[in-house]
View 1: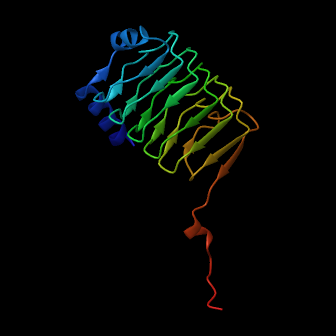
View 2 (view 1 turned 135 degrees about the vertical axis):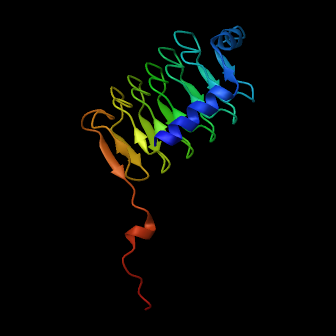
View 3 (view 1 turned 60 degrees about the vertical axis):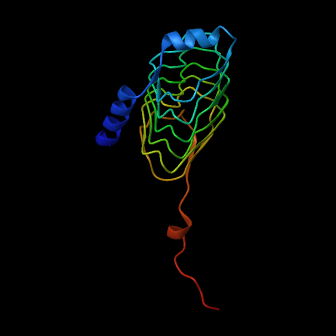
Length: 178
């Protein structure tokens, strides 16, 4: 997994980053933001402690950095199928109730969605690692994992029912000819 994380870090560094200054300028038009295409990452804490309420992230972004939306009233976000990493505390202390994690995401960092009012999340087959407290202090009662995933014991709230879907091909033990 280190090589995948190293690739993501390198791609984010070599690509074009949506900076804190870009975020500040985008918010001058109001709390609904559309990040322009062409950026590969969003800077650490770019929108942290701001009034951002909704964001559309373009298909060019592959990494959502640490604390990008930390402690904001963010209630709506479009995460595109290009994103491979949702870093530590990226959506911590937001107002998200539902999130669609695309099938491109490989890693969800520590406290990524901590202390949000999330009630619904489906975690796709592509996710390999879920960090400590990633979904702790949420309103989740059931989490659906598309496969066995390396998740910390503290990744989800206590008493959360975790359902791991078994691929159909593995679930079939015999097919009768009659």
